[in-house]
Amino acid sequence: MAIRVQTEDFDLNAEIAALRAGSPQVGAVVSFVGTVRDMNEGASVAAMELEHYPGMTEKALQDIVERAKQRWPIADALVIHRVGPLSPRDQIVLVAVTSAHRGEAFDACEFIIDYLKTEAPFWKKEQTPQGARWVDARVTDDAALRKWHIDVALGGGEK
Image 1 (cartoon, helix red, strand yellow):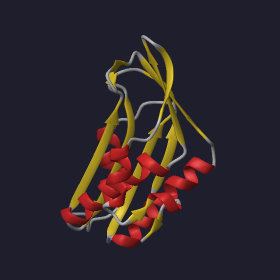
Image 2 (spheres, rainbow, N blue to C red):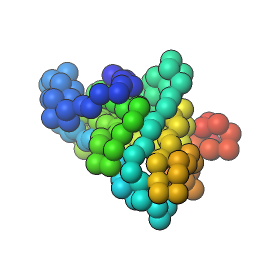
Image 3 (cartoon, one colour):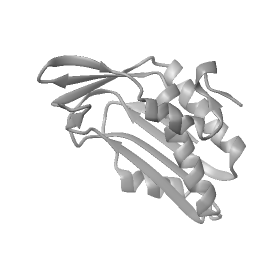
C-alpha cells in the first residue's frame, strides 16, 4: 500500500507499472484519475487550490485503504493526492487497486474514491469570475458513500 500527498504531478503509466510489479498473482488493475474541471456548479473555474492537514490526511487515506482491504481480497492499492495550486485539466488524484480478479478491484477502487471524496481532510478553493469560493462535499458524494453502508452522519462508521 502506498499513500502520497504531493504538489508535483504523477505519471499514470509509471505508477501503474510499479504497482503491477508488486505481485505475479495480479490479474486485474483498476485505476481512477480525477482531474480539475473548468466548470463547477455553473461557474467557470480558472484555478483550484487544495489544502490539507499534514499527517492527519495521510492517516485518513491509510485508514480508507485498510477498510477496502478488509472488505475485498485486494493485492495492493495506491493513492496519490495532489495539493497546492492546480489548473483545469491537471490531475488531482490517482486511486489504483490490484487484485486477482476484476470485480474486487473495481469495487475496492470505487469504495476508496467514494470514501476519499467525503472523509479525507482536504479543502478545495476555486477561483471563479465571481471570486474565490470554498467547495463543499456534494450530496451525491455522501449518497455514493452510503451505498457501501457507511453512515456519513456518524463519522464514517459502518452500519
